[in-house]
Image (cartoon, rainbow, N blue to C red; front, side, top):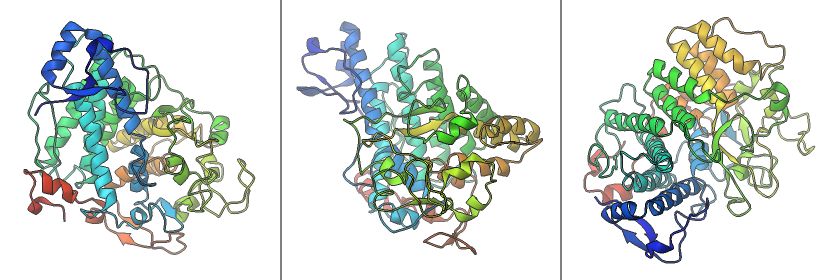
Length: 489
């Protein structure tokens, strides 16, 4: 399979393209170049190939926050929010956008969400392959190394999303059908267009992220919108948690958090999780007046105080009552949710009990999108240590985070993995990561209990196929290496 990318036909006219979220590579006259033509271009005009690679990688980042025709389809954060709404942790108080996700009834082969998740993952993979297939694997140029490293990390991320959403979790399902692995002529193995196995998919994900970390070593990224070595390590830490490789998960999370500091209690009390300027944010999307999706955005759906679907239409995303009841009064994160009595500090309005106030309102629809925060890395490291039986070391790591979240905090002497996960549910609430923890930990979802505030009351066992999407029917129809018999239940 030839890797193709768009380039300006008149090569001599190539100029450095500034970062843009408008397209993969904006030109007035475009054509299609084969890998051989691009290789030749790299020999005769190395700066041109850097321009192409830079424009393509910026295009991937732009795609990750791109409106795709429906107000609940807006890239990376719509995939994450749809997942988190399938857990116990979030209640959506009225049936609206994301309503079928919340009902855990949005997985059939012809449904929009299923097709959107597949399309998102494989578009990120495809666009990353454009760079991987066009840059010499033995590249020494620092800029090209950085673009190639980012492409490997993004391809791995896309593949990790796909395998988690379209098959049961890794542990115990290593030999179950996986998902297609699309590679390039520059890779060490051919494309696997069939389902293969879960193990094969994870082997590729890990290999790509290990390669990314090497290529990104020493890279000083210009903005947090781009992947660097620490973000790649954070992605790999997430993967190792899924495979239950606790030692490597601990190592990668520790690597990822180096150089970052946590918000103090005073800072965390007033922060509203809407800006890349926050020192805890490792990676995210910068939303500008030119790129905002307005109503079709994460801000619109998650923020109770913004003029979107949550705030203006009252489609509140609220914390689970049982989870809220377990938050101590001196934990500042309790203030991230309305008590039904105290008006919100941000706008002075009184919101229904349990409605989230964590995500604020940046005027002009300019909330940035959080892809990774350093607090998550502390929690991964702590859980991984606890699962190794190192409860004391786990407590030391968790205490470092909690002393910045809980007033008059009494440090833990030892902690269990379950205790760490409780704090992860609070810390990462609504950020699009907790659903994947439910899957890897094989947790049930029980919203049907005395005192529940959930609109949809259900009790689903761990491993229920309703948590896993069917493959899109369009993929089965158009991929000769996947048959209807290989469809998920």
